[in-house]
Image 1 (cartoon, rainbow, N blue to C red):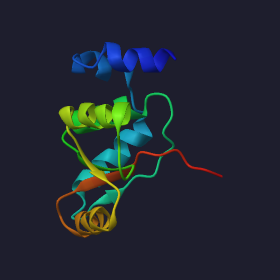
Image 2 (spheres, rainbow, N blue to C red; image 1 turned 135 degrees about the vertical axis):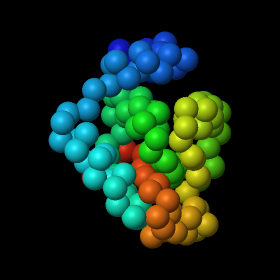
Image 3 (cartoon, one colour; image 1 turned 90 degrees about the horizontal axis):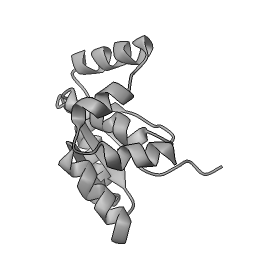
Image 4 (tube, rainbow, N blue to C red; image 1 turned 180 degrees about the vertical axis):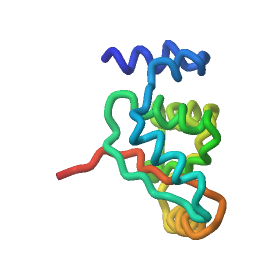
Length: 122
């Protein structure tokens, strides 16, 4: 609950979000490696806690992030996607064309990062 509160409380305060979200040296090294490659990178992560804030911080640092979202977002989920877009993420509801776009981005030198906005189901 705390991270959900922080997410909405700090939305208009990017410096505060960055203060809350600190990446380990290993993650910082990965980001440096990603930005030096002539192709895209796919990040598969579990969507827990401060996931959105972490992606926003990465976008603030210049990473171009394409998020594959649920196919037909409605209501609050649609609003979440708007918030993500306002903070530098590109949202594509998952479809055949969105998967094609993701593949093109991974193969190109545009250095986009893809992430999936759904928790893994066992």
